[in-house]
Length: 195
Image (cartoon, rainbow, N blue to C red; front, side):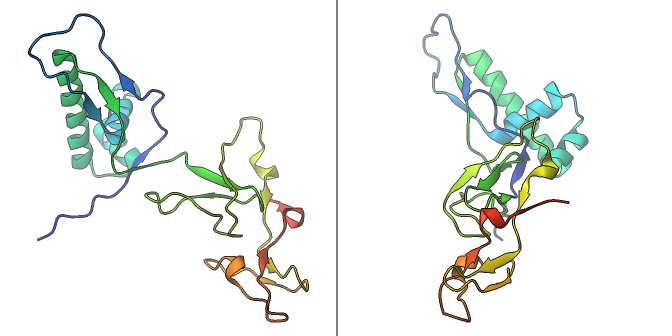
């Protein structure tokens, strides 16, 4: 029987540092290899020991079962204890996770989207197909209602023909029925604001 597929664990945001190094005298005869604390182990410590959630509350936040959360939390505490006692450095990296804060904006059509396939990098805009994609962050000064929302229209730049956008089908893969040119997503100047 094959093992169950590990589901991705939700992490609110990346840690502010990449790890920690011990300072002081070096101990002889002790393994000095670093210890890797995964992002989900970091998140478990942050939720329980920093934000003071119980295991059930923290498991809901991370999107895992309570027993799975308990195993992650226990592993994190054991690694940190080993690093302190043995004087090893700790690096925070890896794990089957996705960040809640991963939102992107297309520089061409200004559409804001997140990545449903968290284990794959965003290479193009799912609406217009543009490769001009940037990480999006909502400033405190930004009013979310005033952000541009793209028209649900594909248009032909050659003849001006328009058709409703079909979700899941990038406009740049559509062919104009009038002149056989490649369609495009609605231009940024055709975007409307959310009512």
